[in-house]
Length: 367
Image 1: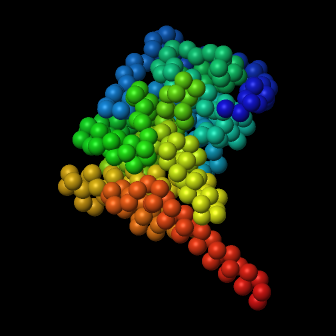
Image 2 (image 1 turned 90 degrees about the vertical axis):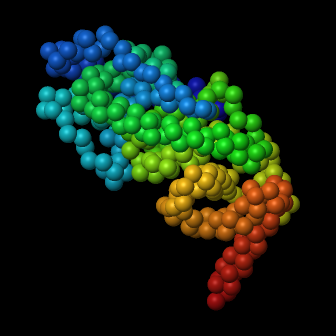
Image 3 (image 1 turned 45 degrees about the vertical axis):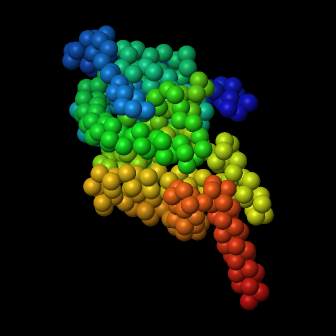
């Protein structure tokens, strides 16, 4: 965590101060609108949230974190949210629009993955699951007020369908993890030279996660926490297996620490280059995709195509990564060469490619 986390948190709360009066007004408007529809009973009773633990994953479909992410999505520009504004009963539109406006002004400029306050918000709302009420001790009074005011609208208009979508996704992912999860875990731990965490990885399933479809953070207590979309096409069907382990990999390895990270840095230094910051991410895309392809092939799923191949991610600088990973990293996965040898050959290939590109640029400038 950065040392200026306290200043960021203070800035976050101050930036939302102007919403205090509006939030309180919104609360009373909503309460008056929906009390006749069982609002009191809806908030007094806790939505039962039953996590599903399968192997090394603990799946959740939580009310509050789904509300938070749905509001975040609805506040994005239309071309980024990739979903039109939802249909809503006329009596609820005003209150919902105020909540979306708050997110548009105060939340969507904050990245869900990298912003430390957003990470805390995810952690808190995930723990609250389907609790009847939340408070602002962690997330700030203004945000807690906005979410509390929007909660009965979300519960009335969308939550039943969203929860059903999430739980359907979980039911489809469950047999995949049961069939080959232990095998995937063993293969990845060996490839990365890393220990798999003893505690289950928490996966909060939501209709919207972020622009990529999923992301993972490691919380202060060491809990690996993944937010994964149930509606993103890249995370459905057999690909759920690949991407669950891709996200888990984010909580286990990175490009600088541990056996894998240190080997990447060491081999890059030996070949006179800086290890590309995104190389290790390309490596886990290749590794989880390749193991998922092999393991599913063993179960008769012969046409599985890893996500990076399917979505054409091997472009630009990643084009070099794909060729080198497919040759040398694959040889390592097959047990034909060592980790250091594989990474050495990859870094040598990247060094040659960089020298070639630099020479081409100098030649072009000379013309």
